[in-house]
Amino acid sequence: MFRLTLLRRAIALCLFFHAIEIRGIQLSSTTQEEPTSFAQASAYGQVKQNYISMKSTIIVAAASGQDSGSWDQTYFAVHETSSGGPNDNYYGLQATTGVYGHKLKPRQLTSTFITVTHSGDGVKSSFNAIQVGWHIHPENYGDSRPHFYTYWTRDGYDATGCFNMNCPGFIRASGSLVAPGDVIKSNSGVHEPVQNVTLKVLKDKTSGDWWVYYGFNGNPTGVGYFPRSLFTYLAQKANGMAFGAFVIADKTLPTPPMGSGAHPNGGQGRAASFTNLRFIDQDGRSNPMTTDWPKLVTSNKCHSITPIDRAGCLYGGPGGCVR
Ligand SMILES: *[C@@H]1O[C@H](CO)[C@@H](O)[C@H](O)[C@H]1NC(C)=O
Image 1 (spheres, protein in one colour):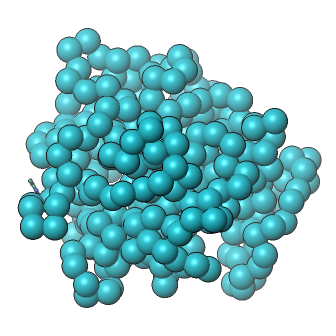
Image 2 (spheres, helix red, strand yellow; image 1 turned 120 degrees about the vertical axis):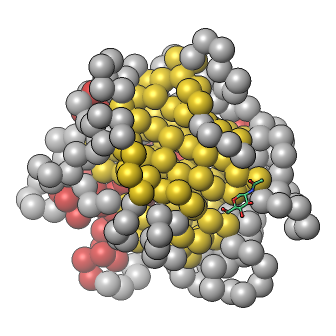
């Protein structure tokens, strides 16, 4: 039941944002479509556009990790590569980003993440993704503290995948100092320096496994890996990457803050940032991101993300946004 709801929601959102991209206007997000309709819609030359939009929307749809049928306020602010073309070959990325404490209620969620994806054969059930970041997710942890998290899927967030170690998949490295799901102990306060996490996901050339690295105010070290065999398309490579943030709330609650809670353009307080954004190539070498990527932002009034400049950008926004 939960899976069906989540899937239907993902599809509805996908079609919704697809429609925005195509027509440049806002449509109702209440569209409900059966999976077959999605497959049909994808079939004729729309695969790429669908996936450009779907990547972000299924990130959002999957974000709660449970039945999000009534969590119907979702906002995201992300940068993402184009996806699905023959020249879209990606092997990893790295980013450093601040971690902030906020008081959230159950059924409110704020997340900052990086992700590698593969759009598969164009049908949602073949979508592969690894997502790594920090989030405050009281529904999942029973607290309002920031947690380091991982998420994976190989079927468009339907039957496979989970957060952290909640299902078999992620293999911890022996001697790793942290585990997926761990609380990030030091929050950035108003008068304290921003505490940073460095996140890195990369495909090991020899094994083909996808390694996750994490650093707290320092260089990232190996936390563990998603075995190559866990995936279908990601076993070879990624054909899309994205980074940014999203917030979700039940319709009866205000949306929570994104990032530090400050808007990059608001002038009030310091906005959260991504710094030292790096591509990782097939041989594991990393290079700073020197070009801007396309943006996907639900509502610039609520949350935004600035263009990539000198391998960094600002993002975020206050809570309490109503579309
Ligand atoms: C975190 O990153 C920001 C932005 O680069 C920097 O100003 C700050 O000093 C860093 N904080 C720590 C504790 O290293």
